[in-house]
Image (cartoon, rainbow over all chains, first blue to last red; front, side):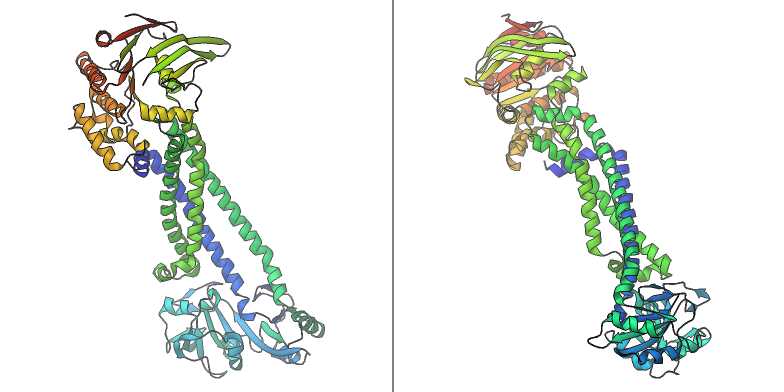
Length: 394
Length: 224
């Protein structure tokens, strides 16, 4: 008889208890996966924000809080004239004014909040310096051709959600825009954006003459730091942030998020360990006679050890499989709730929300925890001797 | 197999007091012997069987099998001897409840590393020999007490042991079934030439035994 079959049967002797233990482990796994995947996704989005402006200094309003590349709040916004001032600074190769606006889109009367959607206004002559490596889906369409055209390029997630395609007319703040291209990108940030000309964005969102980001690329031989210092010295009402400074601002938050996530995982896994250990100890204690009989008929201690360990590991495997299924589902539901994208649309990209490697890691962790949970009960089972057990019974 | 015990003693310590369960037992068991150990409850019968069956270590004295002292061997060596050279029959049968009759009999052979085919063929033969070929897939709770004890006997025979140790094998059975079990043990002793050591109160067993020992207060003496 195979060990695995024997262990399955042993577990089925106390069906309800085993089931409850498996559900406990499954709940723990579900929680870890859902919370972990959601946290990871948002951390990824935050990290991605810097990708577009890699190697550049970002000039924002003096009082703006900058999360990676996204300025929030701030006092006086940089004007178009600020761009001209920056252009005169030594050590500058290129500068691009950008307007980031959120919330941006109203569809069927529903406002979709930050950070799910945003609009980005970029001068048409500067598409390449911002989206240079980002192609359009199926190579169909083009970026807006001139500043005054009512054209927009949209992120693929928006296109999928609302079934927009090239040629679709969309309404933003009473302005009718034609979709002229769909970005082909995996970046979470660009997945949900509407890109249009700077002038059009300023008009639609009533930011005439203002921008909230000016990127500044240093010439070769000039460091970002030197350029940022020069900008701040000459223009008093802006902050010039290097890539390192932007990362430094967000790093402590990301570390804290990761630490909390790890802490939660540790607590949940510790609880699972205690649960599995308690249930297995009860099971071993009830089967003292069986283990003593195995010892009497000559079963090796390693065989007895394996029986108990396989039983506790099976609880972890079954709970882990259920937990992965429900955890992935919950992560999708959470992503859907936070982004207002229907669940059905998330299914094809399930492994972007819950990466397979993460699932494997959590599965391995919960199986290991269950396996470890069986060690103490297994050691107890190994010590059972027929003479002592029978004597204790009489 | 020949077994000889010399001054075999087992003392249990219960707090400050000591209980001598088996006291300086000298016993010689030779091949194909059917031996009964009788005595009142608490006289040390089961303890002596556990010592002889290498399920327990003596406090003093030694046990020799085929002239080799086995009393000081490691527990894993004892396990090997129990697995390959001994078979055990308990009063309460001690079958594994999640295994069928067939699987219970196959288990010692699986532990001994025999092939799956060999296990099944042998287990089928043994269960047929004890009259249970129609109860192969039944689990212990689906069997009568007599049937459970037959399965236990078949399990004890699985690895062709040289010695079968039975502790009150008829203690839980009605007299008709007890008679059948005794007949079975006797047949095994005679046909397979296996030593059978039985601790019992049952006079029917005493009647068929080649040698009868009485144990009282841990001390053993030959009765007949």
